[in-house]
Image 1 (cartoon, helix red, strand yellow):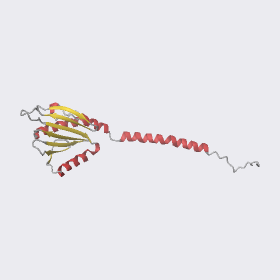
Image 2 (spheres, helix red, strand yellow):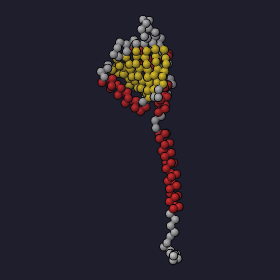
Image 3 (cartoon, rainbow, N blue to C red):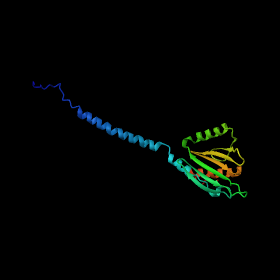
Image 4 (tube, rainbow, N blue to C red):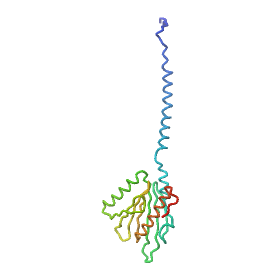
Length: 195
């Protein structure tokens, strides 16, 4: 093989080292950018767990419900809780009155969920009455049987639904609703809220 002459126009080609260096830089930047993006997402997303905790903490105080009633069992679920509030024992031997209060975390969709629920009740032909003084928005639903009724209200990211069974007066349901609303306000940070 003839000797290669040294030519000034000829440059030694050493592409592999710079290419490897570029690949290493890109390989290091991709995970770093992903980590920064995930951190920003975690910081900027709504605090679902605080909404969930607020729903779990929204149990009414015994001192705020009607006299003779008791705050019973509270069952916890992923984004809500249901508290059983029992009325006085019946003197006639029939079942006593009970109100089931369920508080659910809907987050930013709470107003939409509340509006859809009210529309569904109206569309089903149920008697719906707007309530003042409970929650940011509230309505009562007349039951199809004597003594049975319900109410639903919204406060911030939480929606409460109260349903009665047995003979429960509107005044008793409303007082329990006010107690649950006070519990929602306390759970959302208003430590001085009372019914």
